Length: 288
Image (tube, rainbow, N blue to C red):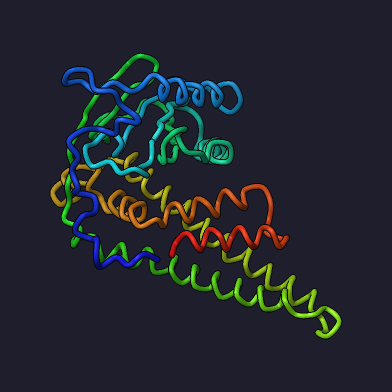
């Protein structure tokens, strides 16, 4: 993984003068979402509405609406659906959306993240909200800054398990490459050894993808639930909650891109071919 020590001070609290010009046009003192971005996002909403679930309203929220945006900051698309759907149905809808729309906004490095909200979203839970379909700003733009030192213990604990899994994945791929170069007619059971090693690669990738989904769901749940009085005193706003700050730190250090790339690779199929192992190697190499 990237060396954290050199760049921690610049994370999260780096403030820009303007919102991302790839997403917003500035008209006087007002930021207006670019028409091509609006069209793309509305097409996504319409597609989900037609194929997956009835959408009542749609919004953009999160750090892309702040002056602390990064080139790879998520575009968080919030979709309001019927209040009476149960949690199991919400998860099912969320999984279908994730499978189809794990993509980047065209012309940018911003990943699209879609969140399903049963009933009306409580606007108090976000510092910035931009309504699609001609609605414009409800809240924001905004500034947020935090003291990173207050979050590092939790961050290191969270990424520690990912680092362990990533190290195991690298070792399994090295073993796989060694086995692949051996002559079939000189090694007993070589095919079975390769099959077992591929199964270990699959298992480790699935573990990393599971951790990604868990981290993302933790962040989503933190924004969806009311802050406790203790949280309000300690953090002030939901953007300063550990679940959000840790998510942003993971975004900053490329953990999220790494995990998303693995998720996209194994969404439909297990890794069972040499070409797919090579794709895992390419994803790992992007971390160096």
